[in-house]
Amino acid sequence: MSTGNSNVKPDFDVIGVGAGFAGLGLIHYAREAGLSIRVFDKASDIGGTWTWNRYPGAASDSECYYYCLTFSKQLLQEWKWSIRYPGWEENLRYMHFVADRCNMWPHITLDTKIAGADFQKNTGLWLVRTEKGEQFTCRYFVSAMGMISEPVIPDFKGMGKFKDPCFHSARWPQEGLDYSGKRIAIIGSGATTVQMLPVVAETAAQVTVFQRTANFVMPAVQKPITSEWDKEIKENYDKIIQKCRNHSFGMAFDSPVGRNLADTPPEEVEKILEEHWPRGSFRFVFETFDDLVVNAESNRIVGDFIIRKTLSKVKDPETRELLKPKGYPFFAKRPPLDHGYFEAFNRDNVKLVDINEREPIVEFTESGIRTTKNHYEFDIIVLATGFQAYTGAQEALPIRGQNGLLLKEKWTEVSASIMGVFVSGFPNLFMITGPQAPFANLPTSIEQNIKYIVDCIQKMQKEGFALCEPKRDAEEAWVAHTADIHRQTLMAQGDKVHSWMMGANLKDRNPRVLIYFGGANNYYDKLRDSANSGFPEVEFRRRA
Image (cartoon, rainbow, N blue to C red; front, side, top):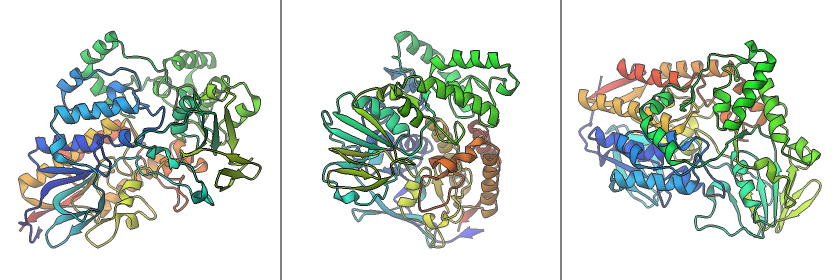
């Protein structure tokens, strides 16, 4: 079948939104394919996560040497990381290094918020509008906005009354903020707070953490990248990249290990866990036993081990009890890595408040926060309240498909996609790590997604296709497949504890399956199989 009016020349072949890892990777692969491209970002700098999240202690939870783009062997050899888990400053410097060395700046427009993107039936192009009143057209519209980028702002009564600074942690003031000697509230106890608290507590007069759900937390074991380690990394980058490509979470780990906890004697289990605990990182999950997220008893044993290890650092019995995860399995919520979180609660200037059962927040006041039991006065309130994962950024930007339906409206009940890339009813729209893609080391998934997207575009360019229209039956099949796998894992219990991995942290919608848990490596294989088979999940339409 052909489509008419396809000879209208667009301003760009590709328009991408978001100038983090995904945007920079998209520029590289699109240029390599001979496509014209423009990437827009509402921020004043590139970096995505690392330009927005500038809170004290903000750092990657993936180890630096595989938390990077891998398209250039030369860049991998040139850049030297200073520390195992780089802070936001070093990650941002790395992003600038990539953009500078690859001359990406001519393709990037900053300080420009996209007001909407509409598919034009008559031309087969996307019309992209900015809040400055500009309009641009493209043949292929790509969301590079990131999996965790749209903050969730709670709606506590009286929030507007508080007279001093109050902001989401992902909107920490770009110019910096002097919090020394100040009384600080942190609402939330997820990965952001786990990183932020130990740093802020060093100089703040008082820090009060308002906790809804206690977390399982694993050790990071931060350490510098020595010249010897740097040499070893650079000599083995081909193997490291292959490990990431073939790992279930896209990380350079030696797993699966061919060992289940359920089949291992208890004394050997304890020995293995003790050996791996001091090594730090998510290796503790993936290089110990292979059945931790599918076998409930194996999961419980490891969860109990983590609780013993972490809570032994906390002196006060009452605080220790509040910090104990209850009512859900390990990994039903994404576990953060520890950089001194538990020790921070031993400080005289740190207080923990349980807002789930003991002291729910009633309202904000001019000077602080009132709970059912107390009134706390603060100079700064930080909302570490998480994100609308996977769908938030796409829903915040009005994206309208071929039948006038907004993407947000389509996703009211189910955040449906085909492999997290295509959405039926939205021709020539591509998402990088959209809903129902894996939760994995993001740069690995990002590059695999981009290669797949660019392969699809190149097929269209070479064979004279104007449109790729995702098939509804392929979408329904992927949704069902993703849900079936999800049911087989302990992550399916995340709705009990407001896990963002199921969108259960949002009040205005039902929990849903947002993540493909069939293994990132298997997902990458599916992308390749699809490309090698000519992208059977979409229907291509030729130019008239």
